[in-house]
Length: 380
Image (cartoon, rainbow, N blue to C red; front, side, top):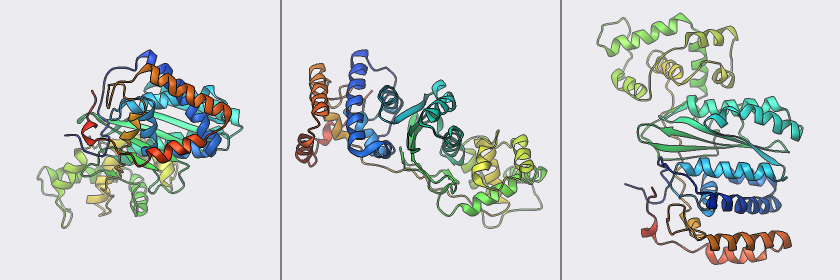
């Protein structure tokens, strides 16, 4: 059942027809230009990092209000627009194979803006590791878009898919303090789960430190993991956690995937004498299964617990913006080419004349308007 007030972002198939994609590009260029003129490049990045604002922009240009494809299509349209315009902000990355080209694109953009490229390549890698490893709720990242302006401000929009329920989760970042990986997100859009392995939640500094120390124990970690598995199987062992339902704790971890230690990654952590959580996460080979195994050992053997709070925010979905032009799948109504062209021409004239007072008048008229709830239906 579709929840009222939120976008669930289910997996959709299909594509955007060329006639609509071309208009999306034109409209996006005008809107992005107006935004930079009004708020600067930093102001634009702050808005892109806001899940509600991003969804509203998606609805405005005609993408489906509740589709996982809204992220990939809308960020793709924005990337094309910003990379063609000379506004002082560029975009790297994208979906699937395009995301793997992010480092090279970031280097080119950084050189153009005379910024330190490796700083932003590292940021890109780290935020991806956080949302794929440090924070686990069954979602696998497949989309990563990195926004960078000439002043060095950055934003990231990335998305993961849960293969079991076929729902997407979108992660938003903006100029986060990565020296302290605690509550680093600007916002997370999706359906809140009953739990998530969350090692970047508030009050997790002690747990982060414990993970690093445990990882450096070498063979002992493997033995500790075997002790836990033996308890689960019902064997009598010399150690048993006090006041803990071991099987219930184990099932929670196992529901997120396999629990396997990458021994080579642990060796790197020990050899490099890793001290901070950022470096720890960036170690090659430290993936979700290894972090799950280390966290299980920390909780059941050393009695140091992670947070199990799912940090998703449930922003009210700005469905009203879909009434500007309609939706690709005809929700709330079919997009009319003539109306779309009229809006593009109108905004183009406003941009050329610099007279934006009329937009403020339109805002006053529309901001209190509420759409009929019965018209908010799932798209397919």
